[in-house]
Image (cartoon, rainbow over all chains, first blue to last red; front, side, top):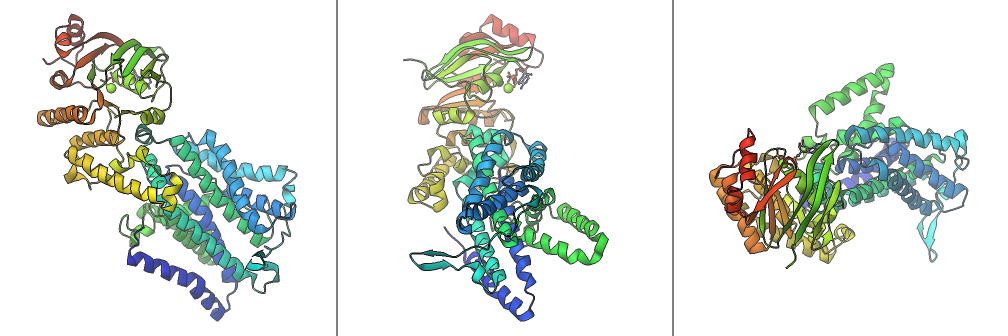
Length: 325
Length: 260
Ligand SMILES: Nc1ncnc2c1ncn2[C@@H]1O[C@H](COP(=O)(O)OP(=O)(O)OP(=O)(O)O)[C@@H](O)[C@H]1O
Ligand SMILES: [Mg+2]
């Protein structure tokens, strides 16, 4: 694929900042808590990438919290109760979330616009209630003291070190989350620029016309929703592992709404929009902490203004249309 | 030779309203067949049933002897029966060329995963689609606007784009719903020539719905006339022009006249 020199340089700078710049700054300032913040941003950005993908087929998805919760529980149960390695439970969590998405998606993906959005809004609550009710999820007590990810070695060659034997798990989780995020967005970029992405675009713009040219729209909707939820499951599972615990309230409706806002804010027309949106929204919220009880008010006002005056997202400011598509 | 398309006793009811009542006719391979009739006669409904966009209430449509009604639109499109839309229906934020490229996806040899990983077959597909898009746009005389965003095009070009998208799927049968709507006389005559060359040079069987009578009489091999959901006549243009029932149907309606 043809990448321009400018794009390659952008990617290079980005990788440098993430893997070298940030650790250096944190070491220099001693703000170790920043690792946790940035790790969260990376993981939330993974889940947001999924939401962005459902936008790409013209569906407003306010249910990603449900799939993050599912992923977190699946991984926790596999590690704690079945004794699996976290590194195998991670893709399993994504796949399970995707499977649930297929089952739920079959009936609801026919709905469009607000109807689909409303149903997905309910999903997170349903997931929470299910977690409260099922024996395997341990009800309100949730699953706690999940062991840290164990080491992985193939033929005696260590690939991933044992997290519990590490001095600085914060850095390890940060690196892991960043790698996952980069893989997610690289995959998303490829997908959008491949035939599947083009078919999605055709559906987003006109479903009837798309089916008249032979696009199996219901199949593609399901595939996309499954991939979207896979990302949600991965993000959630990773979160659970870092927190070493999962509760029914680990992901709530508010989280689902935030995933969606991240996409709006960054820009629905840009693959990397949700990443930027997540970063800005997460830090924006934190920075407004000083305003105490006015935090929510100021935050909401700024969001409304941003969406009003930058309907195509933050990335529409700097990037010419379609440049970094 | 057996007909390419057989419409057999097709009926469509919307609640109490019968949009098509027991319609039957055949379309031969390489024919240009027009369906005419006053507003609300059921022409678009018939096309939607042939392309499986709506199910029939009873009756069936066969393509090469195989049922194509009451399936899914994309399945019928894959078999080679493709419709265009009466309303302006385009991919708004794609360019003309992008639309024509995406419409070729049925011809893809590589799998979706192959495209994701960038397989050799996928690269060949991409090249082939681009080449064919340029060829097709050249053929349709649309090369000058190939990089225009669809939403910026004038009405006449939008119609042409709709046809280009349909043609890009490489159909055997193309159903055009009012392809000349909103065009002036010259544009219409150009389009008539174009539709004819689609049939002559690409071997596409064409069915079309049109209100522009001079164009219909000029282009059609045969004509089917609908009125209030009933088929009232079928025949060559000259037979239709002299058919009493047809003249009556058109004189009886306020907003249409048969211009012969
Ligand atoms: N989805 C629908 N639900 C209910 N009635 C419908 C529906 N679609 C069409 N009809 C009715 O069926 C009848 C035939 O409609 P149709 O669109 O097929 O007419 P037409 O011959 O294409 O007319 P025009 O020349 O105006 O395009 C009309 O009375 C119309 O109101
Ligand atoms: Mg019509």
